[in-house]
Length: 269
Image (cartoon, rainbow, N blue to C red):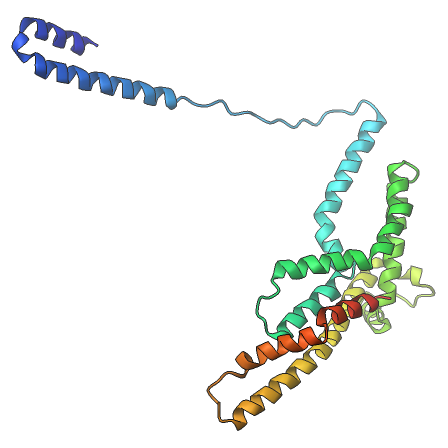
């Protein structure tokens, strides 16, 4: 501002240089306004703060609510592992992956579609178990009719029954021997630490057996097309390029998705 006052006095004292001085004043004012706007815009913005306090409960109901929230968060964090280990998801997703490899369609259907289909088929095959858990474990617990231990036992009973139906005795015997447990008088004596890995191994074996059966017709088709191309002298033409449309056509003609889904669902009965 002092410099601007000096320039004004110079304009008054020396009117011949007024054009040059006016230009200097304009540039000076422009940079002052720009500096002021930058200073204002650079002012720190207020940032909201979040605070989570842990205080003393005033009554037992608050303690019960806190424990319920903690239990719910624990279940949500373990939900993917529970879905994979204790349900029909493992067998279904492996078989769907096998059928995609057998047809050799690379990433068609994509992984998102396979996982989504396997998830909904899992909910469909486990609907009776889910209904039993809701009626005998979840609802009584929410109504404060049973405690957490009773709710866990009531929830595990239908799940254990489902796993026992799908688990091979050979796998149960192997893990029982490794864990140095048994002999068992009843199925209820078998612990979950023995049952769960036995169930997973049995599910993987069953899925691989179904996958082997699915591969057979497509392998035969590949062999026929490869022999045909070789007999015609087309050795430079990849057989997979020719067999892919015929595989898709064969899969459509026999209504492959209907057969596979029906076989998967009925294999859990």
